[in-house]
Image 1 (cartoon, rainbow, N blue to C red):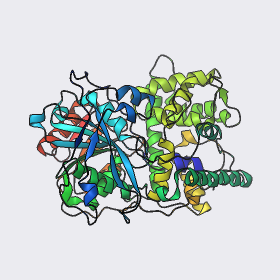
Image 2: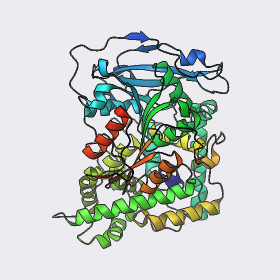
Image 3: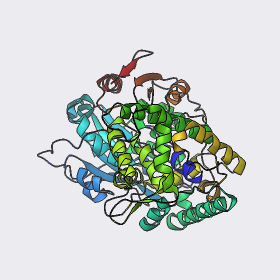
Length: 526
């Protein structure tokens, strides 16, 4: 249960279906300094941050992954770091820096403003997301009329300092431990591992940084960025966990919003356990859809009867609890990695074929494809290094959400999760092992609550009927809480805007450009 709470409770990363960068500019952007702030209301004592100059330069120096090292070569992209207080209660104290990437609007004369993007996680890089989306919006109205701006929330990616908990070798070892033993001794061992993990996070990141990485602080960073970019009002696109950033910004700075699209919503008032169980049910629905698709192929590792797919998946994966299989290059596929590979593949139908291939390999005692899928989820590079996505996810989750401290409540949650997602049931009794948040060295700074918003411009919430990670009803609830407009997409994937579905893309673009929300009850399909 400890691993399950850690990896799945918050809404996992957006799987971008966007293409690569657009055609390179013949005139690369030149390094330059820009001072456009302060703009709009300035909180007391924050003048120097809201009015700071931004030094823009090439993006290659900001890359934190192999994908970044390729995408950030695009000469049309420019990057910088923004200075913000580590602790907003003490703006004259320590400062940290936020990584920012910008793709300027294609038509400067028709430019509306900056469109800030967050891809979710928590822990995902907004700089990477913006670089990935740059190609898909090139020559579109969004790309022509908005600067596309991605920011790495504090502690993440190119922001400094970065949250770090485990070394690369420690992360590899942690993934091989499935934590499946739910006996008293197994629970004690799991909880000791969680204590050790929390202690390493504090030692390697610093307790003062861990205390200030939550969404509460990211929202204030976003408002500093808005002003420093010279934007009177915020244009924001948040996917998955990024919808929580958006809803909390709307609560904190309702008068500073021009337009806001929230895609793949988190229910703002849902408890930690209820969110966990709802997500489990979402992944089970996606697994069932995968099983039906697979049964219709000429061959299927789970067989031709979708009703037997859960049983067949368990037959293939449960033996890994006691005996991982070889996956090449001296590595092994564990039970936890096999299930995380399945979860990764269930984010989008484009990954279903890879999941079927991986399960067919597992039938033959091999784990290469499934391990590759799990590596993608955890941000492992080919050279064995990791991005800090998982460490940042844990750190943010532990200060954002109410902690589950009662072992019996943990056991009940694990039981409910197994019932909601039986394909992920490892066959052992429910566990009472608490996750690392129970041992976290700093207090909670936020908690999911219904946002109390003042007068807002119309907010557009997009929710997908069979979204595996952020269930459809969460979008319904968020739209109601923000008095916004709901756009429904009928499909099985996690998030959809700017990913090639013309009905959704057209509606979202019209909203961003003309502030026209789609008609009430609008539904789109692929």
